[in-house]
Length: 213
Length: 213
Image (cartoon, rainbow over all chains, first blue to last red; front, side, top):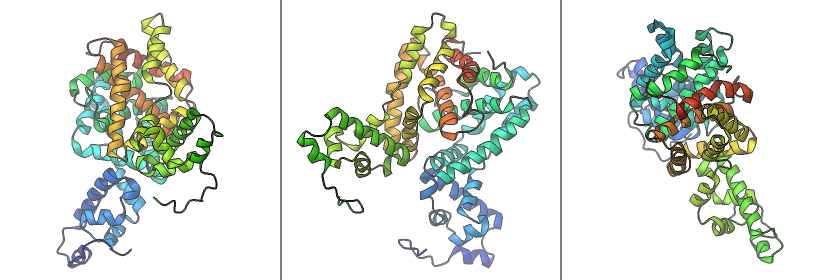
């Protein structure tokens, strides 16, 4: 692990962190995680090495291992969504007195949460890394199963809940990729209101409708 | 361009093709295209070099340039879907006397076309390459706009046809990624009949329904 091709640092951040003149541990961890998220999103799992992430965060590579343990663990942390779909669903269910309107509320909440630029980087982390590295694909699959589809199934609390959760996944994943990654028009610039009207009934049906006919 | 790390060929295919003892031009072109599709699907755009593809097809790299002109042109050819969504839609519309049942017919045709292993490789070509190379992303975007959403919009022949075509895209893209790439259950193993019943009405609505409420 020679730092070939990189400029030597006069004042290694690792040393600074020991001196107590750096911001608190929480800030350093956050800075590393933000840098990692950006690198995984731009470069994918393989090319976002610990060294590249450390340079981006302006910290010593050893500090990343100190805080996260391994690249795998750092990647899992970067996959953690700031606004989790199960929470979005649960809040929509709690907010809506009428269970027949919850589909539109969920679509609106999803778009309001994901339209800002920051959250969509997590989508890029997920897709770019899963498409380029088998281990990353496995971790993304685990995340989807354990952190999204499992909790959504539990929230739905019906016998075919896992099938319904998967159907919701097809609609929201396709919407996210089309709107945030492919950037194809007119969908990428469609207003939230138009999308709520168009997609709300689909989501409503996957949540509570009869799926057998 | 030294063939370092590769075994020397006693009988270069390029020479064989001139001798007339190789299969016809069409077969060679097909073999190159099949190898390219496999390499782009497995490796993504950057790592699937002309040299790697040539080795996979057991032809001389120069022969690939002879047939396709450039790596970009070869990639565009590999993106060509064996069963194009506009054709699937048009056939479903022609086959169905009742326009209110066409959603289910489209979902069934889509799944019957895409469930076999060969077509889904094209999905991997598209996703893996678009997620790892900007130029490939541009070509995938062109293909989606010109070969899928444009023709589907024309087939629909209504003022909001391009928005409807995009909505169909969100549902089918999400379905394809969830079923063929993430492999998450129960969706990956769901029967075609169950998916037709569950997703058919969504597709019907995006095709002909009122999207404003």
